[in-house]
Amino acid sequence: PEAITVQELANRMAERGGEVVKTLMKMGVMATITQSIDADTAELVVEEFGHRSKRVSAQDVEIGLRGSADDDALLRPRAPVVTVMGHVDHGKTSLLDALRKTDVAAHEAGGITQHIGAYQIEVPSGDKITFLDTPGHAAFSEMRSRGANVTDIVILVVAADDGIMAQTIEAINHAKAAGVPIIVAINKIDVPGANPNKVKQALLQHELVPEDMGGDVICVEVSAKTRQGLDNLLDILLLQAELLELKANPERNAEGTVVESKLEQGRGAVATVLVQRGTLKVGDIFVAGAESGRVRALLNDRGERVESAGPSVPVEVLGLSGTPEAGDDLVVVEDEARAREIASFRADKKKTATMATQGRGTLEQMLSAI
Ligand code: GDP
Ligand code: MG
Image (cartoon, rainbow, N blue to C red; front, side):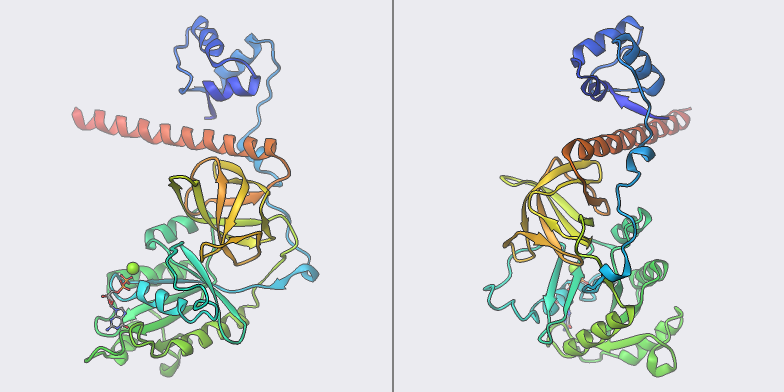
């Protein structure tokens, strides 16, 4: 059922929260301003204040939020978005770090200290690749389950000295469910006793047939430590990306996905956002999950201020009302009223969902206490 907090109801009527609490009390409903009341009760309160009420479902509010599909003529090539997955300690972070160092501009930046959940590199040919550092497989599937399909290609990292492990299998399943091409990076090839053929044999059991065994899964032998095979891996990524013909319209209001977000002292709520269509600009008004805001500043993956970010570009966004969740959308809208309306409907919806789960928890506790 739909619900609204007393405070939010007061805000929408432009009445004092305390007055709404009093009115509720007269109706025999005891609620503080932070508590939620159901839609029927809210309607009675609205009438009591002499306002007209109109129930709008969250669905109505969301209509038209995301723009319609773009005309083919407006589409421009965009960089592939690549997610690195695999078993713990197989070298995901090392590989991401090593690949980042191949960026043609990385040296000018004087070393990389900034860590954001995503970065983009430019290879000597001028092509670009965006890498996502997912905090884990659970986060990846959680994002997907909420409709955020952010990745175009998955690199499955398998340590040659360890082989296929539990989280490797998990990663395979997530990548298959996402329906994206998998490139297997057989890592730690420098370690004595590393056995890439054994890894390839084991892949067969998970319906991944390597190219040299008559299948279509590309395996690349690499070492994040010695950098062996990294150029080969990049070439293969770019080739795969070319086959996918990835495109987006950069000339429209931005739409993207929140990759991570945090509260930072002095900076407030900061979100790393992957722009997927359009161009995000400083000054843009947006809704991001159940939060809203106006872009106060944009920072690239080196921590430098930028004025805008186009498709496949990850940026840190400052100017949020709070921290959205990984997998939430970020959509630029026309005005603040619209942004706040959508954000507040989503916040209400989230609150109702939380209350429902809490209610279930209590019931379970009650039952277990019997
Ligand atoms: P993650 O848990 O998958 O992110 O793995 P890490 O990148 O943290 O690597 C785990 C360990 O393996 C670290 O001690 C790395 O230094 C080491 N490691 C990663 N890649 C290589 C490699 O190619 N060769 C060798 N010898 N060690 C590696
Ligand atoms: Mg790691």
